[in-house]
Length: 116
Image (tube, rainbow, N blue to C red; front, side):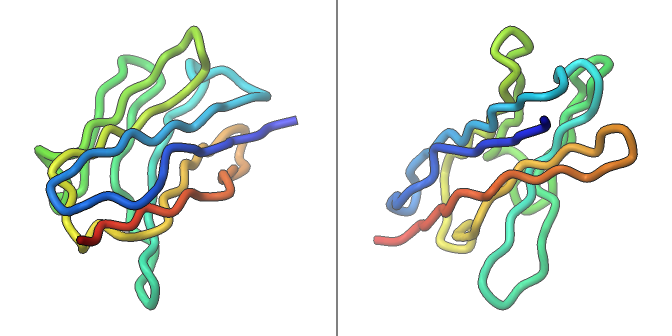
């Protein structure tokens, strides 16, 4: 059974940092790319970052480039999103995603709120 479980969200002041985790079960990270998305109230879901399965290459939305870092720990089968220099506009529900064997899998999401 495939499961993606996010954790690490919370309330943080502008300029602060958070690290999100996405623990994966049911397949290994070596078998597919992983992505982080976010959705703010009243807005469309936005692709934030992705990491490939083959060589670990990464890509980022322009809005987070230079502030966010996606990484993976194959031994723990977990993907991370390190978020630094957070801004109020980063407030959203963050979800990890995998497209594996033609099926899209999503975690339940974790709320990130950036506010003073």
